[in-house]
Length: 356
Image: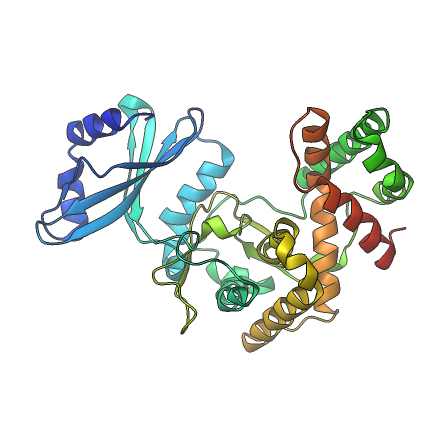
């Protein structure tokens, strides 16, 4: 579905007012002039904010339309809602209805609308401290052997960080990184940026694909996998009180080192926010300390310095795929907000952590 008119037509054709009335336990109907497109990818998914009413109050919902055939990420998200929801419902918007529409080769999923943090509040470093306890609680439920407790509910073919397929993919990206570095060295624009880091990064790449076994040994769990601020929601975000955090877009869920979520939540946010970078050591240290303290409340201790684990996870993630993608973007003439930071941190932290 790419147009409001199409959504309304199919809504009426397949009697979605009736279906949602059953889900809500009362008669509700769609307000046609309050339909908002949140995301539209013709080849993948479209996401819509709709408003239902029972005649006295408004009920905002989200309609996510998956186009068939499903790719791996879409299968993961659908399975999270249909099979893992009983375990993770406190972190997820409420699922109202999910149904395949074979005639239009789509699957429609209707969930509760929860306000994204973005737009409610200007995110400051101290706000991360209101998010991290929820992430630690989420991680702790499947940390290490605890994942076996939920194997009957989480019957999902999840991507595995420590798998042959993952290692093969990483090796392919390492080769791409080497190729793009060589191309950057003869690019009139990129050479000045890449040349001072070239030898060190080539040396580091030779030590892959698993640069830091310690991040696996420190513990894996179910991670969200795309934990940036756009995917974090809260009904009422303010500087007062606790936040009731919920997460959306569960397409990137995987079984992986827990620190990968912290890399995206904390470290990549620092990378993007130049105004945070003057205090980045302080912000990073406070967030890592809080996460370790929260995990300890759930009975999980880290044998290695948590700050070192965050840095190792950042380097592993950057080297296994992200550096190649941003080099490729720059070589194609596109803007890369992270390439300079990636190059600098790979070398500085690589030296600090013994890769150079």
